[in-house]
Image (cartoon, rainbow, N blue to C red):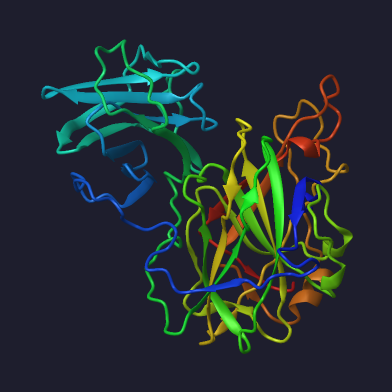
Length: 445
Protein backbone atom coordinates (compact mmCIF):
# COMPACT_ATOMS: atom_id res chain seq x y z
CA UNK A 1 0.00 0.00 0.00
CA UNK A 2 1.50 3.34 -1.02
CA UNK A 3 0.25 6.48 0.76
CA UNK A 4 -1.21 9.21 -1.39
CA UNK A 5 1.32 11.80 -0.35
CA UNK A 6 0.66 13.98 -3.35
CA UNK A 7 -2.83 14.83 -2.05
CA UNK A 8 -1.89 15.87 1.48
CA UNK A 9 -2.19 19.40 2.78
CA UNK A 10 0.06 19.57 5.83
CA UNK A 11 -0.69 21.46 9.01
CA UNK A 12 2.16 20.82 11.42
CA UNK A 13 2.64 23.91 13.51
CA UNK A 14 0.07 25.53 15.77
CA UNK A 15 0.93 28.80 17.41
CA UNK A 16 4.64 28.32 17.93
CA UNK A 17 6.44 27.39 14.73
CA UNK A 18 8.34 24.11 14.36
CA UNK A 19 6.55 22.41 17.28
CA UNK A 20 4.35 19.33 17.35
CA UNK A 21 1.49 19.60 19.86
CA UNK A 22 0.60 16.83 22.28
CA UNK A 23 -2.48 14.70 21.71
CA UNK A 24 -5.36 15.92 23.81
CA UNK A 25 -6.21 13.96 26.98
CA UNK A 26 -9.98 13.88 27.49
CA UNK A 27 -12.38 12.43 30.01
CA UNK A 28 -14.20 9.24 29.08
CA UNK A 29 -17.38 10.16 27.13
CA UNK A 30 -20.68 9.00 28.55
CA UNK A 31 -21.32 7.46 25.12
CA UNK A 32 -19.18 7.14 22.02
CA UNK A 33 -19.41 9.22 18.91
CA UNK A 34 -22.03 6.80 17.62
CA UNK A 35 -24.43 6.20 20.54
CA UNK A 36 -26.63 3.17 20.32
CA UNK A 37 -29.87 5.03 20.99
CA UNK A 38 -30.59 8.73 21.05
CA UNK A 39 -34.08 8.48 19.62
CA UNK A 40 -36.68 10.19 21.81
CA UNK A 41 -39.59 9.37 19.51
CA UNK A 42 -41.92 6.36 19.42
CA UNK A 43 -40.41 2.94 20.00
CA UNK A 44 -40.37 0.77 16.86
CA UNK A 45 -43.11 -1.77 16.23
CA UNK A 46 -40.75 -4.69 16.88
CA UNK A 47 -37.33 -5.33 18.37
CA UNK A 48 -34.98 -4.57 15.49
CA UNK A 49 -31.38 -5.79 15.90
CA UNK A 50 -29.92 -2.91 13.85
CA UNK A 51 -30.42 0.82 13.84
CA UNK A 52 -28.72 4.01 12.73
CA UNK A 53 -29.46 7.68 13.35
CA UNK A 54 -29.29 9.35 9.97
CA UNK A 55 -29.65 12.71 11.70
CA UNK A 56 -31.21 14.10 14.88
CA UNK A 57 -34.73 13.70 13.46
CA UNK A 58 -34.46 10.51 11.38
CA UNK A 59 -33.87 7.07 12.95
CA UNK A 60 -33.63 3.99 10.74
CA UNK A 61 -34.26 0.49 12.10
CA UNK A 62 -33.83 -2.70 10.05
CA UNK A 63 -33.62 -6.47 9.93
CA UNK A 64 -33.00 -8.89 7.08
CA UNK A 65 -32.82 -12.52 6.02
CA UNK A 66 -31.45 -14.25 2.92
CA UNK A 67 -34.08 -12.76 0.59
CA UNK A 68 -35.77 -9.72 2.18
CA UNK A 69 -35.01 -6.62 4.22
CA UNK A 70 -37.42 -4.72 6.48
CA UNK A 71 -36.99 -1.06 7.38
CA UNK A 72 -38.79 1.06 9.93
CA UNK A 73 -38.30 4.84 9.85
CA UNK A 74 -39.15 7.06 12.80
CA UNK A 75 -38.99 10.68 11.64
CA UNK A 76 -39.75 13.84 13.61
CA UNK A 77 -42.14 15.44 11.15
CA UNK A 78 -45.82 15.54 10.31
CA UNK A 79 -45.08 16.01 6.63
CA UNK A 80 -43.80 13.72 3.92
CA UNK A 81 -40.87 11.30 4.37
CA UNK A 82 -38.47 10.04 1.72
CA UNK A 83 -35.91 7.24 1.90
CA UNK A 84 -33.83 5.50 -0.73
CA UNK A 85 -30.88 3.41 -1.85
CA UNK A 86 -28.35 5.23 -4.03
CA UNK A 87 -25.41 3.83 -6.03
CA UNK A 88 -23.19 6.82 -5.18
CA UNK A 89 -25.03 8.71 -2.42
CA UNK A 90 -26.66 11.17 -4.83
CA UNK A 91 -30.27 11.53 -5.83
CA UNK A 92 -29.68 10.59 -9.48
CA UNK A 93 -30.19 6.87 -10.26
CA UNK A 94 -31.49 6.18 -6.73
CA UNK A 95 -34.31 3.85 -5.68
CA UNK A 96 -36.69 5.94 -3.57
CA UNK A 97 -39.86 5.64 -1.53
CA UNK A 98 -41.95 8.66 -0.52
CA UNK A 99 -44.88 8.58 1.87
CA UNK A 100 -47.03 10.67 4.20
CA UNK A 101 -50.12 10.37 6.37
CA UNK A 102 -52.96 12.87 5.88
CA UNK A 103 -56.33 12.78 7.60
CA UNK A 104 -55.64 9.22 8.69
CA UNK A 105 -54.94 8.02 5.14
CA UNK A 106 -51.51 6.69 4.17
CA UNK A 107 -49.97 7.81 0.86
CA UNK A 108 -47.02 5.74 -0.32
CA UNK A 109 -45.20 4.92 -3.56
CA UNK A 110 -42.07 3.20 -4.86
CA UNK A 111 -40.22 5.68 -7.08
CA UNK A 112 -36.93 6.19 -8.92
CA UNK A 113 -34.92 9.39 -9.30
CA UNK A 114 -33.41 10.36 -12.63
CA UNK A 115 -32.06 13.74 -11.51
CA UNK A 116 -32.53 16.62 -9.10
CA UNK A 117 -36.29 16.66 -9.50
CA UNK A 118 -39.35 14.77 -8.24
CA UNK A 119 -38.75 10.99 -8.49
CA UNK A 120 -41.12 9.22 -10.85
CA UNK A 121 -43.42 6.42 -9.70
CA UNK A 122 -42.09 2.96 -10.64
CA UNK A 123 -44.07 0.82 -13.05
CA UNK A 124 -43.50 -2.08 -10.63
CA UNK A 125 -44.17 -1.36 -6.95
CA UNK A 126 -41.51 -3.52 -5.26
CA UNK A 127 -41.45 -1.83 -1.85
CA UNK A 128 -44.30 -3.18 0.27
CA UNK A 129 -45.87 -0.90 2.87
CA UNK A 130 -46.38 -2.74 6.15
CA UNK A 131 -47.47 0.20 8.28
CA UNK A 132 -47.67 3.98 8.19
CA UNK A 133 -48.92 6.30 10.92
CA UNK A 134 -48.45 9.60 12.70
CA UNK A 135 -47.70 9.46 16.44
CA UNK A 136 -47.60 12.92 17.97
CA UNK A 137 -44.83 14.90 16.26
CA UNK A 138 -43.51 11.81 14.47
CA UNK A 139 -44.27 9.92 11.27
CA UNK A 140 -43.50 6.20 11.23
CA UNK A 141 -43.21 4.00 8.14
CA UNK A 142 -42.47 0.29 8.05
CA UNK A 143 -41.62 -1.24 4.66
CA UNK A 144 -40.14 -4.40 3.22
CA UNK A 145 -38.65 -5.43 -0.13
CA UNK A 146 -36.60 -8.11 -1.81
CA UNK A 147 -32.83 -7.65 -1.67
CA UNK A 148 -32.80 -8.27 -5.44
CA UNK A 149 -35.99 -7.22 -7.22
CA UNK A 150 -34.77 -7.78 -10.82
CA UNK A 151 -36.29 -4.38 -11.64
CA UNK A 152 -34.05 -1.94 -13.53
CA UNK A 153 -35.80 0.94 -11.72
CA UNK A 154 -34.60 -0.42 -8.35
CA UNK A 155 -31.16 -0.65 -6.78
CA UNK A 156 -30.01 -4.03 -5.46
CA UNK A 157 -29.12 -4.28 -1.78
CA UNK A 158 -25.88 -6.24 -1.43
CA UNK A 159 -23.26 -7.00 1.25
CA UNK A 160 -20.79 -4.21 1.89
CA UNK A 161 -21.33 -0.49 2.14
CA UNK A 162 -24.77 0.76 1.07
CA UNK A 163 -25.37 4.46 0.54
CA UNK A 164 -28.78 5.45 1.82
CA UNK A 165 -30.40 8.83 1.16
CA UNK A 166 -33.21 10.47 3.09
CA UNK A 167 -35.34 13.60 3.07
CA UNK A 168 -38.43 14.95 4.79
CA UNK A 169 -40.66 18.02 4.94
CA UNK A 170 -42.82 19.61 7.63
CA UNK A 171 -45.82 19.77 5.28
CA UNK A 172 -47.92 17.20 3.45
CA UNK A 173 -48.00 17.33 -0.36
CA UNK A 174 -51.09 18.68 -2.10
CA UNK A 175 -51.11 15.59 -4.31
CA UNK A 176 -48.91 12.72 -5.49
CA UNK A 177 -47.49 14.98 -8.19
CA UNK A 178 -47.12 18.12 -6.04
CA UNK A 179 -44.46 17.17 -3.50
CA UNK A 180 -42.60 20.27 -2.39
CA UNK A 181 -38.80 20.48 -2.30
CA UNK A 182 -37.33 19.28 0.98
CA UNK A 183 -34.79 22.10 1.41
CA UNK A 184 -31.99 21.32 3.87
CA UNK A 185 -33.81 18.46 5.61
CA UNK A 186 -32.08 15.78 3.60
CA UNK A 187 -28.83 13.83 3.59
CA UNK A 188 -26.92 10.68 2.75
CA UNK A 189 -25.06 8.12 4.83
CA UNK A 190 -22.99 4.99 4.21
CA UNK A 191 -24.35 2.04 6.16
CA UNK A 192 -23.43 -1.66 6.37
CA UNK A 193 -26.98 -2.97 6.01
CA UNK A 194 -26.29 -6.68 5.47
CA UNK A 195 -23.09 -7.13 7.48
CA UNK A 196 -23.10 -4.60 10.35
CA UNK A 197 -19.84 -5.06 12.30
CA UNK A 198 -20.37 -6.85 15.61
CA UNK A 199 -17.18 -5.30 17.05
CA UNK A 200 -18.54 -1.77 16.65
CA UNK A 201 -20.69 -1.79 19.76
CA UNK A 202 -20.42 -0.46 23.32
CA UNK A 203 -20.86 -3.93 24.82
CA UNK A 204 -17.90 -4.13 27.20
CA UNK A 205 -17.53 -1.99 30.30
CA UNK A 206 -14.30 -0.01 30.33
CA UNK A 207 -11.82 -0.76 33.12
CA UNK A 208 -11.17 1.89 35.75
CA UNK A 209 -8.51 4.49 35.02
CA UNK A 210 -8.98 4.50 31.25
CA UNK A 211 -7.23 7.38 29.52
CA UNK A 212 -8.74 8.92 26.39
CA UNK A 213 -6.54 10.56 23.75
CA UNK A 214 -7.88 12.57 20.84
CA UNK A 215 -6.03 13.23 17.60
CA UNK A 216 -8.18 15.80 15.80
CA UNK A 217 -7.87 18.36 13.06
CA UNK A 218 -7.46 21.84 14.48
CA UNK A 219 -10.16 24.05 12.94
CA UNK A 220 -9.06 23.01 9.48
CA UNK A 221 -10.39 25.13 6.61
CA UNK A 222 -11.41 22.62 3.93
CA UNK A 223 -10.76 23.89 0.38
CA UNK A 224 -13.64 24.14 -2.10
CA UNK A 225 -12.25 21.12 -4.00
CA UNK A 226 -13.94 17.78 -4.59
CA UNK A 227 -11.13 15.83 -2.86
CA UNK A 228 -8.67 17.01 -0.21
CA UNK A 229 -6.20 15.03 1.90
CA UNK A 230 -5.15 16.90 5.05
CA UNK A 231 -2.43 15.74 7.45
CA UNK A 232 -1.92 16.88 11.03
CA UNK A 233 1.00 15.94 13.30
CA UNK A 234 0.64 14.95 16.97
CA UNK A 235 2.98 13.92 19.77
CA UNK A 236 2.13 11.33 22.44
CA UNK A 237 2.10 12.75 25.99
CA UNK A 238 3.86 10.92 28.81
CA UNK A 239 1.65 7.91 29.57
CA UNK A 240 3.73 6.71 32.55
CA UNK A 241 4.92 3.61 30.69
CA UNK A 242 3.37 0.97 28.49
CA UNK A 243 -0.41 1.06 27.99
CA UNK A 244 -2.77 -0.94 25.83
CA UNK A 245 -5.17 0.63 23.35
CA UNK A 246 -8.41 -1.29 23.82
CA UNK A 247 -10.86 0.77 21.75
CA UNK A 248 -10.90 3.47 19.11
CA UNK A 249 -13.64 5.45 17.43
CA UNK A 250 -14.11 8.41 15.09
CA UNK A 251 -14.89 11.90 16.35
CA UNK A 252 -16.95 13.45 13.56
CA UNK A 253 -17.87 17.11 13.83
CA UNK A 254 -21.65 17.59 13.71
CA UNK A 255 -22.81 18.34 10.19
CA UNK A 256 -19.66 16.87 8.61
CA UNK A 257 -20.84 13.25 8.50
CA UNK A 258 -20.61 13.12 4.70
CA UNK A 259 -17.64 15.51 4.37
CA UNK A 260 -15.21 13.25 6.26
CA UNK A 261 -14.75 10.24 3.98
CA UNK A 262 -11.98 8.37 5.80
CA UNK A 263 -9.15 8.91 8.27
CA UNK A 264 -5.88 7.10 8.90
CA UNK A 265 -3.76 7.59 12.01
CA UNK A 266 -0.13 6.80 11.17
CA UNK A 267 2.88 6.59 13.45
CA UNK A 268 6.40 7.74 12.67
CA UNK A 269 9.37 5.36 12.80
CA UNK A 270 13.00 6.26 13.09
CA UNK A 271 14.15 9.75 14.00
CA UNK A 272 11.76 12.68 13.67
CA UNK A 273 13.45 16.08 14.06
CA UNK A 274 10.71 18.38 15.33
CA UNK A 275 12.66 21.58 14.80
CA UNK A 276 12.94 20.88 11.07
CA UNK A 277 9.18 20.81 10.40
CA UNK A 278 7.89 23.64 8.22
CA UNK A 279 5.19 25.88 9.68
CA UNK A 280 2.93 26.13 6.65
CA UNK A 281 0.74 23.82 4.55
CA UNK A 282 1.91 21.75 1.61
CA UNK A 283 0.24 19.83 -1.19
CA UNK A 284 3.05 17.28 -1.09
CA UNK A 285 4.55 15.69 1.99
CA UNK A 286 7.57 17.39 3.53
CA UNK A 287 10.56 15.07 3.34
CA UNK A 288 10.71 15.00 7.14
CA UNK A 289 7.53 12.86 7.35
CA UNK A 290 8.38 10.21 4.74
CA UNK A 291 8.92 7.74 7.61
CA UNK A 292 5.48 8.52 9.10
CA UNK A 293 3.33 6.26 6.91
CA UNK A 294 2.95 3.29 9.27
CA UNK A 295 -0.75 2.56 9.75
CA UNK A 296 -2.04 2.41 13.32
CA UNK A 297 -5.78 3.13 12.94
CA UNK A 298 -7.89 3.23 9.79
CA UNK A 299 -11.50 4.37 9.65
CA UNK A 300 -13.89 5.03 6.76
CA UNK A 301 -17.38 6.45 6.42
CA UNK A 302 -19.94 4.03 7.81
CA UNK A 303 -17.55 2.73 10.49
CA UNK A 304 -18.20 3.29 14.15
CA UNK A 305 -16.47 1.98 17.27
CA UNK A 306 -13.86 -0.77 17.24
CA UNK A 307 -13.27 -2.83 20.39
CA UNK A 308 -10.18 -5.01 20.65
CA UNK A 309 -10.71 -8.60 21.87
CA UNK A 310 -10.82 -8.79 25.69
CA UNK A 311 -7.38 -10.42 25.92
CA UNK A 312 -5.67 -8.16 23.34
CA UNK A 313 -4.41 -4.57 23.35
CA UNK A 314 -2.22 -2.47 21.09
CA UNK A 315 0.94 -1.26 22.93
CA UNK A 316 1.24 2.52 23.32
CA UNK A 317 3.47 4.62 25.55
CA UNK A 318 6.35 2.22 26.14
CA UNK A 319 10.00 3.03 25.53
CA UNK A 320 9.99 1.25 22.16
CA UNK A 321 6.53 2.42 21.09
CA UNK A 322 5.85 5.28 18.64
CA UNK A 323 5.88 8.83 19.97
CA UNK A 324 4.94 10.92 16.92
CA UNK A 325 1.67 10.43 15.00
CA UNK A 326 0.15 11.80 11.82
CA UNK A 327 -3.60 12.02 11.18
CA UNK A 328 -4.55 11.90 7.50
CA UNK A 329 -8.12 12.98 6.71
CA UNK A 330 -9.78 12.58 3.34
CA UNK A 331 -12.45 15.25 2.77
CA UNK A 332 -15.03 14.41 0.11
CA UNK A 333 -16.65 17.64 -1.10
CA UNK A 334 -18.25 16.83 -4.49
CA UNK A 335 -20.27 20.07 -4.54
CA UNK A 336 -17.02 21.98 -3.87
CA UNK A 337 -18.67 23.97 -1.11
CA UNK A 338 -16.58 26.60 0.68
CA UNK A 339 -16.76 27.53 4.35
CA UNK A 340 -16.17 24.14 5.94
CA UNK A 341 -14.03 24.38 9.10
CA UNK A 342 -13.40 20.92 10.53
CA UNK A 343 -12.13 19.50 13.82
CA UNK A 344 -12.91 15.81 13.27
CA UNK A 345 -10.42 13.10 14.19
CA UNK A 346 -9.85 9.87 16.07
CA UNK A 347 -10.34 8.95 19.73
CA UNK A 348 -8.16 6.30 21.40
CA UNK A 349 -8.94 4.50 24.71
CA UNK A 350 -5.87 3.37 26.71
CA UNK A 351 -5.44 1.38 29.91
CA UNK A 352 -2.40 0.62 32.04
CA UNK A 353 -4.01 -2.73 32.98
CA UNK A 354 -2.12 -4.70 30.35
CA UNK A 355 -3.85 -7.56 28.59
CA UNK A 356 -2.48 -11.00 27.76
CA UNK A 357 -1.42 -10.30 24.18
CA UNK A 358 0.02 -7.35 22.26
CA UNK A 359 -1.70 -6.52 18.97
CA UNK A 360 0.19 -5.60 15.81
CA UNK A 361 -0.52 -4.64 12.22
CA UNK A 362 0.57 -6.53 9.10
CA UNK A 363 0.24 -4.78 5.73
CA UNK A 364 0.09 -7.11 2.73
CA UNK A 365 -0.86 -6.69 -0.91
CA UNK A 366 0.43 -4.92 -4.01
CA UNK A 367 1.72 -1.38 -4.14
CA UNK A 368 -0.40 1.09 -6.06
CA UNK A 369 2.01 2.64 -8.56
CA UNK A 370 2.69 3.00 -12.28
CA UNK A 371 3.87 -0.63 -12.48
CA UNK A 372 0.56 -2.07 -11.31
CA UNK A 373 -1.26 -2.43 -14.61
CA UNK A 374 -4.56 -4.15 -15.38
CA UNK A 375 -4.70 -5.11 -19.09
CA UNK A 376 -7.55 -3.62 -21.16
CA UNK A 377 -10.83 -5.46 -21.73
CA UNK A 378 -10.31 -7.90 -18.86
CA UNK A 379 -13.54 -9.15 -17.26
CA UNK A 380 -11.64 -10.06 -14.10
CA UNK A 381 -8.06 -9.69 -12.94
CA UNK A 382 -6.19 -11.23 -10.00
CA UNK A 383 -3.87 -8.81 -8.23
CA UNK A 384 -1.70 -10.94 -5.97
CA UNK A 385 0.74 -9.96 -3.23
CA UNK A 386 3.26 -12.54 -1.97
CA UNK A 387 4.60 -12.75 1.58
CA UNK A 388 7.86 -14.59 0.97
CA UNK A 389 8.59 -17.20 3.64
CA UNK A 390 12.11 -15.87 4.56
CA UNK A 391 10.76 -12.35 4.99
CA UNK A 392 7.73 -13.44 7.00
CA UNK A 393 9.83 -15.75 9.19
CA UNK A 394 12.22 -12.89 9.97
CA UNK A 395 9.33 -10.77 11.18
CA UNK A 396 7.55 -13.50 13.16
CA UNK A 397 10.49 -15.46 14.53
CA UNK A 398 9.16 -18.81 15.73
CA UNK A 399 5.77 -17.42 16.77
CA UNK A 400 2.35 -17.68 15.20
CA UNK A 401 0.11 -14.67 14.92
CA UNK A 402 -3.66 -14.86 15.19
CA UNK A 403 -5.53 -12.41 12.95
CA UNK A 404 -8.73 -11.12 14.55
CA UNK A 405 -9.68 -8.29 12.17
CA UNK A 406 -8.69 -7.00 8.78
CA UNK A 407 -9.57 -4.17 6.42
CA UNK A 408 -9.45 -4.25 2.65
CA UNK A 409 -8.43 -1.18 0.69
CA UNK A 410 -8.63 -0.78 -3.07
CA UNK A 411 -8.10 2.16 -5.37
CA UNK A 412 -10.28 2.78 -8.40
CA UNK A 413 -9.63 5.18 -11.21
CA UNK A 414 -9.33 5.40 -14.97
CA UNK A 415 -6.70 5.51 -17.66
CA UNK A 416 -6.36 8.50 -19.93
CA UNK A 417 -9.15 8.80 -22.53
CA UNK A 418 -8.25 7.04 -25.76
CA UNK A 419 -5.50 4.94 -24.20
CA UNK A 420 -6.94 2.07 -22.13
CA UNK A 421 -3.48 0.49 -21.81
CA UNK A 422 -2.27 3.12 -19.36
CA UNK A 423 -2.37 2.24 -15.66
CA UNK A 424 -4.82 3.72 -13.19
CA UNK A 425 -3.97 7.32 -12.53
CA UNK A 426 -3.53 8.67 -8.99
CA UNK A 427 -5.51 11.87 -9.55
CA UNK A 428 -8.79 9.93 -9.60
CA UNK A 429 -8.34 7.54 -6.70
CA UNK A 430 -10.90 6.67 -4.05
CA UNK A 431 -10.48 4.31 -1.13
CA UNK A 432 -12.92 1.55 -0.32
CA UNK A 433 -12.76 -0.24 3.01
CA UNK A 434 -14.43 -3.45 4.16
CA UNK A 435 -14.15 -5.84 7.07
CA UNK A 436 -14.58 -9.57 7.39
CA UNK A 437 -15.31 -11.76 10.38
CA UNK A 438 -13.49 -15.11 9.95
CA UNK A 439 -9.76 -14.74 10.51
CA UNK A 440 -6.75 -16.99 9.83
CA UNK A 441 -3.74 -18.00 11.91
CA UNK A 442 -0.44 -17.03 10.25
CA UNK A 443 2.72 -18.99 10.90
CA UNK A 444 6.33 -18.38 9.71
CA UNK A 445 6.03 -21.27 7.23
